[in-house]
Image 1: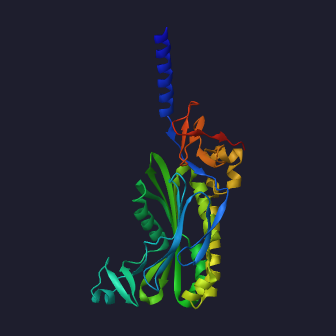
Image 2: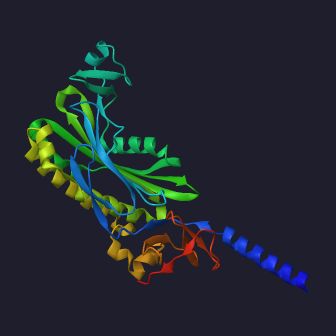
Image 3: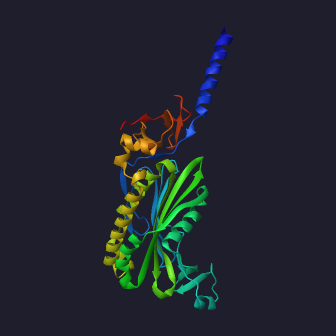
Length: 340
């Protein structure tokens, strides 16, 4: 009898372990319930609102007194979703020309522009081209099989910027690209919007604004909403601008209007895919998008998850898995469904 009981207990334990092992990775993203004000810790050049509880970083990177990059990056607790503004590893370029070639500079070489400035010799790219090429370079480090599924110019945004920059002999161009790739057995979606600057006849060109995200495909619209909020909340410090530019007031005004336009564009472009949080709380929107909302009773964190499982679980690192049986995977706690 004891042997039968022991065998039955072993069988039950084995079945429970098998069910727990059937837990599947789930596309999930915490719903941002509170934003915190984050100030550039290096030069106090700007402030921005970032999600509380995420892995937040920002700063101002400098090559020299004239070349610098304000940048922001935030990563969801599980590390799968990344939202970024600007890239501190990308600097400025100068287009190939007979004059540049005569000086011995070929494409890919570094050109000294004087005053300590450095430019990479490279053919000029449009906003559409740059958003695609930059996105593929960065995604090669973050996921596998990345490729562009859509890209287009954004003359509507470019013209808004050119109203302010054209009188200074500066031309702007804007474009965007959308990508897909794979990471941790999940289908991922990425997006990049690039605003480019071309300095007249000098041949110098560079991006003056990048906005991008990478997220599990089912919750990519939610990530777009996070990006739109971040861009819209970005503000330069007037005192810092006054130190680096003699047209600080003009730059601040143009930056505010540019950020508002980009934020609105991202929100409208991704609204149908879940960028507006109030809408995805509705039952109809959840069904249409193939997502649902679950909450961690211990922390109060709410997650947007890809539908398809009977039960959802999260570990302390914010990783979410789904099961068909009500059996907790080791190290995971059960999430509760949040009704519409």
